[in-house]
Length: 263
Image (tube, rainbow, N blue to C red):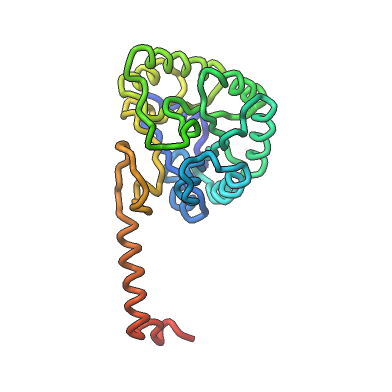
């Protein structure tokens, strides 16, 4: 199976939903590769892997190292890597850091959280041959406390604001737009207005595709708060706990290691 191209992803709009999940390591990259269209190395690794309260302490080196591990083990899916907080505050900083992260990881796209203030940065990056994925609606890097996050696009002012922003970003050259926690009718209007695909997270099935954090859909950490839009498909946390208990029991009863597992 050859690597999916951006052209093929574009052709999926209005025809076949696009799939995207996160990976931060070689094992997950190997599992996801070819099974989803897009693999996202998200700055969600801050809360998911490192136990941070938000994504603001994630730095460029962390994204580069996890990104390289993922991209080097992804041969069929396209890859997206997040630009961390405060790494794209102006055009020159954004280009320097985007080139750094893409040169090191070989990812296909960088993703930046966008609003009307940084549309010009998206345009500058695309003019410099950087493939950009924009992220609108709820943008987590703006929050130090995730419990304060609320969905957006519920009234006409918010809705019109988001629709105009999405169109500006398309005109600026962004390749895909992630819609996070956007009210479904607004998400539908944005998706219908654009010629590029929208990828939803908590933004209804009116989007052209969907993305979730893999650790959430497998319930790797049952202590993590899970928003309304998370669907858990398997309880890995429970299975791992059972495996650990079985190991401890076998060791205490001297059943492990048996001859089979000894030299």
